[in-house]
Image (tube, rainbow, N blue to C red; front, side, top):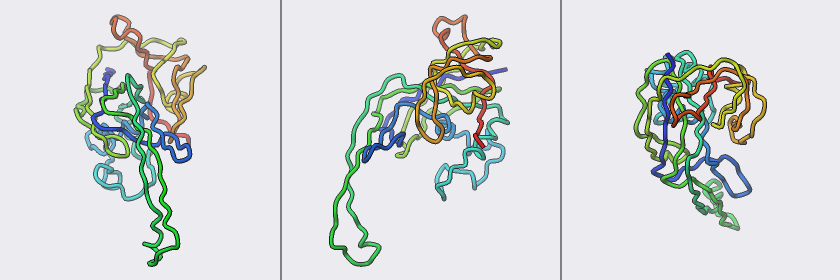
Length: 239
């Protein structure tokens, strides 16, 4: 039994993460990576979903090192047959913030340098009340949180979860998926024919994907009939 949840994430704070860096401008693209959402939903450090969870893997309160461990953290979700898609923006506005800092090298050298030159940077963030949509695919029913924290500032966001009707599994044929996808997670099980690229770390996403393979649809529901979700997606890694 495949269960698909449609999730609407509404920001209650400004959202910041550096999708791209242009000189002193750090810009947040209005799209959310599925790796980030997997952490945001608490799927990584919750023993209910991750059977190998340990203090070493927990990022809930403290991160002792700046070394990503996506493969170690997300592979157990494949065993639980849980998958989170990237999120598409439904509506958003951007806000531009300027921050300043000073050259405080004298704090290290224990003496003041000849110059203390102020500098600045700018962040382009996603404003509160912006909304994103993504899907959670599972082989069993899940209890997802109503409130989450996301981004560099741990911004507060409200999560509205809707369990969709039982999907229809369409056999292998060509279709177009407008929802953003992680290419590593679909290329091993589907034939990707064309797409648009969204450059962002750690893995660039693709959207408006024309592809061949199995997919889920909701053809008997007028409100959901435009949704086509590739089947058999799971977390995959390049190494």
